[in-house]
Image 1 (tube, helix red, strand yellow):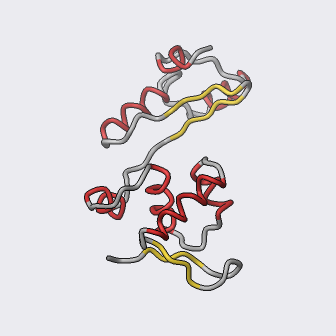
Image 2: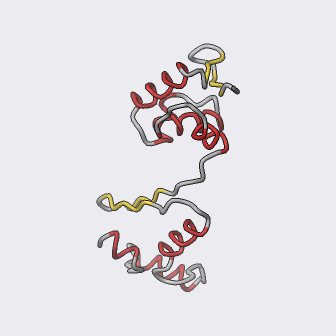
Image 3: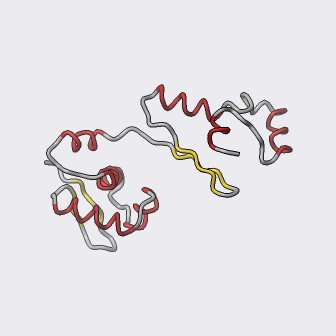
Length: 143
């Protein structure tokens, strides 16, 4: 099984008995159409195409969302931010209580990448820490 074959609509249920039950219950819209519909819907809404990964017996789908207004403004400004910094800034803007470990997990990047991004964002005065390391939170600075 390859990603190309899956994208083409090949449908091989991993649990045929469960697939049959879902089919009989009317919970299946059409065999082999889900991946193509996901790609089509993302394109229709101006989103990046999902990423599909085969990981041994696992299958991972990564969906991407539109950048926030904050990220759009930052990109249009004089700031020079890489993708990790933009994602960290966006995540902090949504939830300032996120820890480095939570940011690392959420963004699927290493802790050191998150630390570098935070350091850069602080140096550029885009974020600041309120409170202490244990009970504090991040605040996006309005310029």
